[in-house]
Amino acid sequence: MSEGLRSVIAAAAVLAAGFTWQSVRAAAIPVNAADRLVAELRLAQMGALLLTLVAGAYIGFAVTHEAQPGVGFDIALAVGFFVAAATTIVREPRQALTVLALAFAAHAIADVAHRPGWVLAEDIAPRWYAIGCAVYDVYIGALCYLPILRRT
Image 1 (cartoon, rainbow, N blue to C red):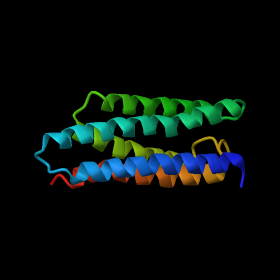
Image 2 (cartoon, rainbow, N blue to C red):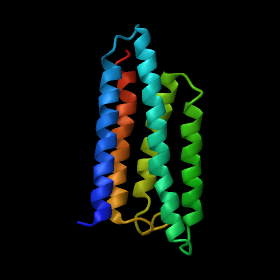
Image 3 (tube, one colour):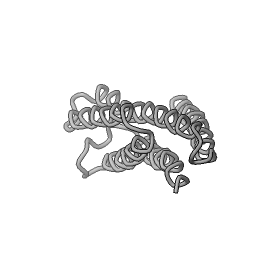
Image 4 (cartoon, rainbow, N blue to C red):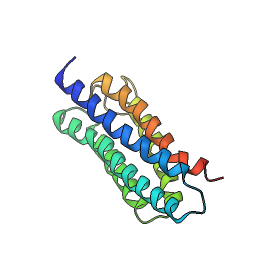
């Protein structure tokens, strides 16, 4: 196991653990409590940062594979995910968390689309990264939506 893989796994685990705690804590607060709104807002802000982080990694991959066809589309997608994350800052928390859950699902699809023969640049990222990132995106997206499910 390479140092890069160990570092990515450790960072992802720490961020996921903190985000899980934050999501479960927000979902446990009574719906009508003022603290619930604050907890959902903080969760949305952290989710937006995580979305920017996972999408921005593909900018780094594109820079290291600058001659490969399709890297411009990867950069455009990363910017699109940044814009989606930025728009959540001005939305009410329920809308922001819904947008983030959908954006993480879309990013998981983009991760899977890096397979050979698909739309996006193939082999731009290590296969373990693309698969791991897709699973991570689905998990974080579900955590974004958890407080919304517990609202009804």
